Amino acid sequence: MRLWLAPLDGITNYQYRNCLCLHFKGIDNFITPFLPVQERAKLNVKKWKDIWPKHNELLPAIPQLMGNKAAHFVDTLQAMHEAYGYTAFNWNIGCPVAQVVRRTRGCGVMPYPDIVEDVVAAVTEHTPFHFSLKMRLGLHDKRESLAILDRMERYPLQFVVIHPRTGDQLYEGVPDIEAFAECLCHTHHRIVYSGDIWTLADWQRLQAQFPKVQDWMLGRGILQNPFLAEEIKGMASGGEKERFLRYYQRYTDELLEARKEKSTLFILKSLWHYYAVFAKLTGYELKNMLRINEFDEFYEKSIAYLQRL
Image (cartoon, rainbow, N blue to C red; front, side, top):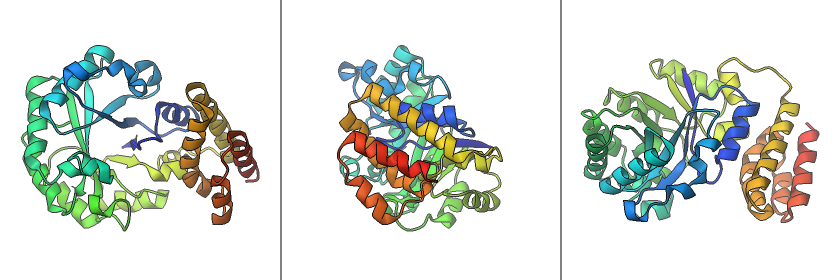
């Protein structure tokens, strides 16, 4: 059984991934937030700090890519391999953000199985690399995923991550577990389940429903409880308050080494929508905290909330 850290754009940067792995156990693999594919003439992969090998030494990293042109995928994969030695890559065809979908990227690709097959066929034919997909049930209709999975049966995909919502749902409503079960019947590929694993009980329920699934992706659930992977694997060892404080202080320091205070504050505010659950903040306390626009004041307030646990 393997646990994966989900790629969350703007949040699961290399500083977050490394600090999570240093302070908490249980995560086995991760996929990086997406990077755009481009034609060879426009590529400068050395600017992509998030995938620099020195930033990804603690766990195996799989770079995630975004795009829809087969030739651009081949060019980008080859350039990333030449620069950094990567041999496995993931394609994001599940992002539901409107500006991504409008450009026929992310989940906007799912109504077009010909595009999906063109990319996978080109990567398979012209590169020796492992390739995988991260997808949803579809953009508008869950049958879109079935059409893609049927097409993919002839290709040697490393795995397929499935989030059982449509793009139209964004992150609202509940995952369609029956549709996920139907997806399993349409593929022989290794499947990674992703979606609404908030607690140990959530994982236990899903694992009982899908005993053959051996790969589980943790996203928003592990953001609000970084001990979740340990709990699932029976590795919890206590001292939660002290461990979280050490992690939070180290992570903030790492961000400040790479970014300015304004950028660091923006990232921390995004995370505190989740940390507020761990810190047991009321809605009023979180709202007032997010109104703070000075880094030092915000950081001091956050530490005070954690210390009161």
